[in-house]
Image: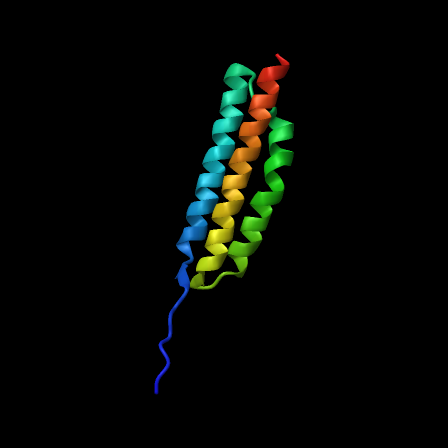
Length: 97
């Protein structure tokens, strides 16, 4: 009896999309700080985002034509946690003003 093979992979361009969204977020936060002086300054923003960016780049450089759907799920969860972290920092900064 043959086994049913399920492919739990997605195209690698999804990683490129994650990197693109990451760079958009960085540009938006940097631009927002320059205009309003709200949020992390350039240095703080770079140090906050650099570890995640280089982890995604390392993952991208090791990917071939497809990646595991579970890897994308982990990246998605990581992004959500990152968003919550920045939101909580924003709330904390607002209450200090």
